[in-house]
Image (cartoon, rainbow, N blue to C red; front, side, top):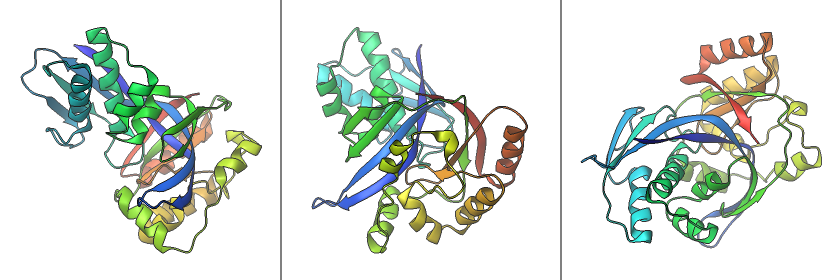
Length: 280
């Protein structure tokens, strides 16, 4: 078996800048990698393309693992053989990018297995056929991501010894629904990414720091999400949604505060609480 862990990401900020002529949106976002994720293994002798344990995701070619396997083999002219075992610890559609991270794990595992190297241009071409977040995971860490997600710039953000506490609240939200609600709203972007980089300290974020544009429209549709975020901010301070899903996260140092926050999450989360460290 050849194994990898598909780390998740969080969107510390997410600005929706404008709707493009092709129906997609230009964004400006700060992605941070967290050392927690699904476990994925490649078995070159497997007769099955994918076997999944944990959260329910398709065991067919619609799974991003299978799509990444097929694209890799097509690109390098390799006969597609073997299959993957996926231990799905992150719920799908939650905004943590686990599917895209799974795809990057496939590229990394197969590159090592076949002794091949993918240059950045090739990687970007392959990755964008699956999803823009895949290319981010090839860079990892702290990145400013813009355009459709294809523009990725490594940035400096202090770790500050913080733990990430995360989970999910309420029903998952389809990305297309979230952006559609945004387009129908009268909201304007909060331009949180530029604001954060004027004083790039995670520990200084406060309860009034709403850094994800989509939160405003999703909270109009998801009462449980709105109640949780409002209640947490009142008692503890900063918390945010990630991406367009139902994933939420906050930061905390080890100690009594962490225990209290974990207890609060346990009362309300549908999944979680889980903890991980920032990789930045």
